[in-house]
Amino acid sequence: MSNISKNIQNVRERVTKAAIRSGRNPDDVRIIAVSKTVGKAEVLDAYENAGQIEFGENRVQELLKKYDRSEPFKWHLIGHLQTNKVKYVVDKTELIHSVDSIYLAEEIEKQAEKISRVVPFLLQVNVSGEESKFGITPEAVEGFVIKMSQYRNIRLEGLMTMAPNITNMENVRKIFKELHTIYIDISREKIHNIDMKYLSMGMSNDFEIAVEEGANLIRVGTSIFTKE
Image 1 (cartoon, rainbow, N blue to C red):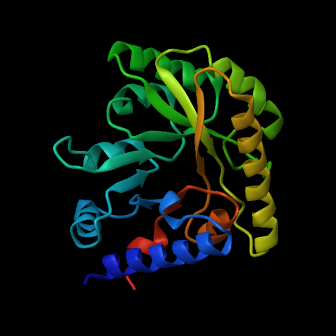
Image 2: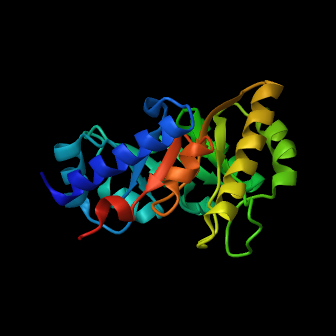
């Protein structure tokens, strides 16, 4: 068993325990292995030795390097997406996690229409209010969601956030709780063409808390691809 496969097994076990602690089904949580710091060999290791098929990239150019249509991988774009790069990924991504403006959503709509595809995406919400992070404010979410219901070639399927890199895990928990509340509120409104399926929260240092607070997509890189 490779180190990577052992790491994936460990992450899966931790996810299972976190889900059970919060009364959830562990099978409802999908692990996105963030491969931004590694090469294709490590991606293949994760797949061949641990059955991992979902991977996340922060940068379009890195996704393009690793993408191969003949392979079974599901690629997620989890980093900031520039409008001029949209055309390169609309036909390659399982899910875009990081839509953070109307302009970006409109560009995805435009490029998706060209290839007759409906592109699923998540709205990135800057719950913590940090200036260094992308995402719209919690107060702007409802208006954004209503606007998105008008488009035909994109589909809003959930929300994403990044917690601040702090040691106080209770403050991290508050961030995740707030986004979960927004997620539930939107789900209950049953807005046309809006399908609140996914809540993308949690990375290597806080994914267990994210699972406890309702995340069903977690983005884990270091805890999977560490060399140690």
